[in-house]
Length: 515
View 1 (tube, rainbow, N blue to C red):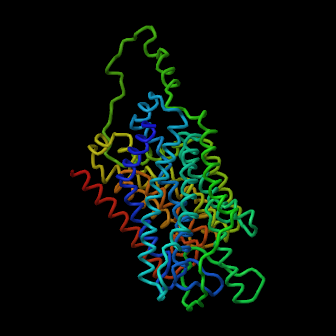
View 2: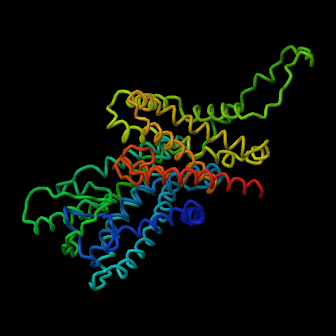
């Protein structure tokens, strides 16, 4: 028990003191501030037909709990899905594996640590929601229970499920982070978009949000006196300039089946850890030792030939950038398993044959997101592999090394989008061609800037997931590649943002080099 608690304590402290946690916390607070729009805001988060709730305690508590459950489930997985890998890199895992702690105890300690990290963010957002109530409320009394009940029943069990899912993915997929990212992306999308009109399906909702949303819809139906489905929007819908009508939402009484389901989700998640425990590698290095134990061919006895120095190829000094760009491209294309390129090729074929109205706004962002494991380390792999002292001491590390990484990244992204580029050129849609080129530069510069600033890849993975998910939902603000219609002001803003990312990346790397 002492070992179990020690692992949880030190793992929690290590995570909460990291840059990725602090940055995610700041982002969460900034986003939580927008969960309930101010009275004169031009956007909405939860809107049923033309109605939103009065700004009473119940509306603030339940709306922020729903948004927290969905948003933090979305980004939380990417925040905590590298606990085992971190232990392996820092060699803490090898030390832990030498202790009497069983596989289950170790894995469950990682789950509990993940859960505490996510719950810390939930608690801070909970406090933020109370502050927002006093800032925006319509004169309604403060009821603490209307905040505690939804937060305990909705986001807390969801965070435990995400904490378990992160550990399960690490155990099953081991070092293949790209498979973890892609699997969660499609799993999350399937769970969010699935319909749940019956009580049975409310029980099967891991986020616990659909039963509350259904109750809100029923309240509006009573006002409108209609039985048909009402229009519902969840998420950030911009441009709601018409003032919405108000209805009173006073919370809800959760059925026993739902309460038991929230406990069942946590128990089933724990059972899942028990099931996968035998498959945990426990930082076993047998394969590595087996390779080392074989005698390399270099040391086999063989005839030593005389080396004539004059016959050796004379080395040439090359200060150009072409060779570096070629090397970076090779590194990008070889990263990950080769069969992943089969998926990329399928995506490129879809870009070539599917109607542009679907391929441009939907297929392209998903295809680019599949390269998250390549782009996330484009400017931080030297630090991760501890060769940055050697790399940064090379000739012109800014003008040659960093520039070659950016050129290689943009080239790879444009190669994946080449079928769509060719179709746009044939149709003489040169604005789309320009947007795709600008979008490729934007996402590569974003990956580079965040990698340089944080010296890691977590923040970019989180933001790239959010941006891609927003693009699939056709949120105009997140469209960085021109898949939706835009005004000239938006185009100028995108260009300025892309240039700003490049400047931030170069200046930060320059500062790091001087240090």
